[in-house]
Length: 604
Image 1 (spheres, helix red, strand yellow):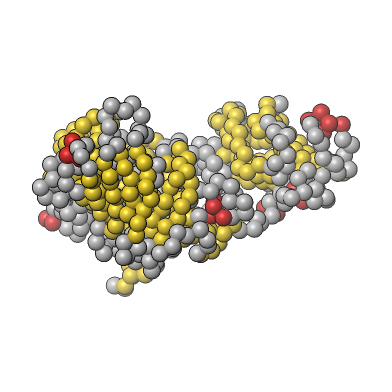
Image 2 (cartoon, one colour):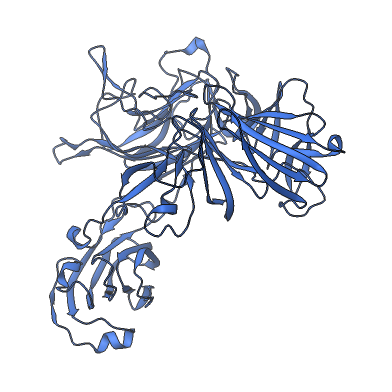
C-alpha cells in the first residue's frame, strides 16, 4: 500500500450543464397532520408522531402524534387492491422531495401520476442493484413478462431503520391536439441520499402495478401500500410550469474593440449593427477584443421574481427596465453561472445586455437563461451561441484491490481542513480522517475518491471529495474534554501511523500522559459499515472519557445500538458496554471511558 498522489481513472464529465435549474423550486409542504389530502385512504395509512427501528428490525416502532405518514402494512393486505395511498392533487411536470424510513425486508414505491414507479426497497448491501432495488425505475409488464426496467447507476441505499432522502424530477408525457402521445414520460433525475441514480430516463408507458394503464398529461401521486411498511416525513412538491417568455424587437451592435469601463464602452463606434432573432455570440466576428450589445423587449407572462443566469468570457452586464440585474464586474476574468434576480410585472420590459471579451485565453460564447420559481429555465440565446466546452476529466482514485490512502485538503461542515487522509478499502467502505484531531470526518460506500480538484489544470483547491454519498460525522476528536468551549482539542499530538499486514493504517497520537492508537477497518465483508478500535495506555486512562459520536440527538434503540443525529447513522456497541450520554455545546455525546480498548461499529 502506498500513499497515492497520482491519477487512477479518467471518466469524462460535462463541464457545464447549461440547462440545469438555477432557482430552487418553491416547494410546497404536503401536510401530514391528517389524511385530508388523500383520496379515500385505506385503514393501513395513519399519521404518527415518531418512529424508531434498528437495522435488523422487520417492523417500525411508532408513537402517537403528527408530522409523519405511516403505512401500517401487514401480510393480511399483501398484494390486495385498495391499499395504496392516492393524492387528491393532480400533477403534470413536478419535483418532489421527501424523507423516508423502512424496516428490514420492506418494499414500497412512489408512483408519479400513479403510473410510473420509483422503487423503494430494502437494498442495503446489494453490490449490483437491479430495477427492483432501491431507487430503480420499475419494469413494465406485458404478456406475463417484464421489460423496460431501469436499474439505478449505483446502490445509495442506507441501512433499514435510518432516515433516507429522495428527490425526483418528473416530466409528464406530451400529447398533440388530437390526444396522440408525441413524447413519453421522463424522469429528469432521481436522487437518493445525495447520489444521482438516474438522469433523463424515458418511460415508454405505465410500470407494473400502476393504478392506470392509460397515459394522460395529469395524474395523482400514489404511494404503494400493499408490499411493506414505510414512514415518510418532510414531503414537499413543486409543479413545474412551462414558462412562456420571449424577446421582441431585438437588435444588436458590435464593436470590434473591448473597453476598460462602462463609459468607454458607450463611446466606441459600432463596427456593425442590425436586427437579431436571438442572443447569439456569433454576431461577433472577432475571437477576442470586442464588445457585443443586445437591446430589445422582454415579454413575461405573470408577475413574479425572475432569475437570469449567464455564462460568458470577459465581462458582461444585464439591465431590465434600467435596473442592473447582473451588474458589470469589470474584472476581466469571465463568469460562470452568474445570476441575478428581479421582480417583474406581466408584459413588456426593456432589456439591455452586453458582453465585453478581452481575455484571449478564454473561448467565445454567451448564454442567457430566465426562470422563475416552479418553472423550467428558458434559453434566450441561440443554441449555437454557446459552443460546446471541452469536457473536464474526473480524476478518481480507486481502491478495488488494496487499501489506498490519499492526503488532501477537504471541506467539512463549512471548513476547509488541511491535514486529511482518506482511506479507501476494497470492501468499498471508506472514511476520511482529520490528523489534527484524530477524528473521522465522514464515511461512505461504493467508489472511493474524486481528486479532480487536486490535479486538473492548476489543482488550486487541493480538495478531495467522496465519490459515494457521504455520511457526515461530527469530525471532533474522540478525546472528550467537557471543559472546552470549542470543538478543537488541546494537548493533542499526532505521532504518525503504522500499517497492518492488510495495509490498514493505525494512527498514533498522545493526549497529556495518554498514548492512543486508532484503527478503522470494514466491520465485515458485506460492506455495511466500519469497525473502529481505540486502544489507550497510560496513567489515568480509566478516568478519561472518549467520544464515540456527537449530534443533535442520540437515541438508544436496544442491544447496544444507538441512532445518531435523528437516525442518520447507527453506532453499535458490543455486549457488556455501558456508555453514557451527556450534553456538550448544545448537542448530545455518546461516551465511554478508556479503561479497556474501545471498539464500536459505524453502520449506515
